[in-house]
Length: 126
Image 1 (cartoon, rainbow, N blue to C red):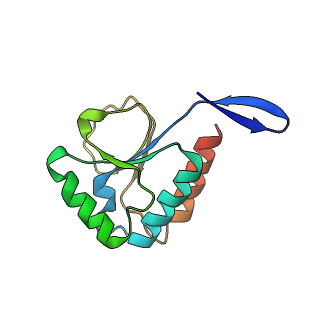
Image 2: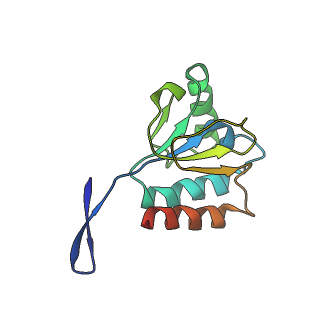
Image 3: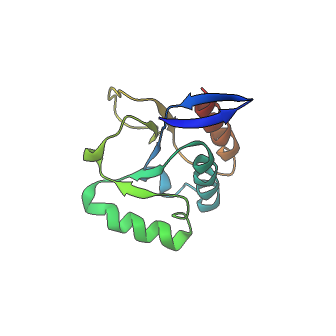
């Protein structure tokens, strides 16, 4: 738990991370909107994490670094390092039951990144 000062009251805010599924960083996702979403997420969440399979973590790190998309990502975690945080997942995942809050999307692009930022802001306020 972290403490937050709000309107002359001391409020307790549960810390939460955003975990983005690595597949959402691949084309057709656009690099600048992805970077903007992770930048905005850093304002609302303690950590912005990318979730990838263990054997492709290095490949994603190199790809994201070259594209300028890794600036606001804190770490790449494996699927086995599951945390109960907000997840941004690729929409076409098979019917799996998730025990944590999710945002289903197919792509992060210029046409939807502002809506994603608004959703992240609204979730962080609740």
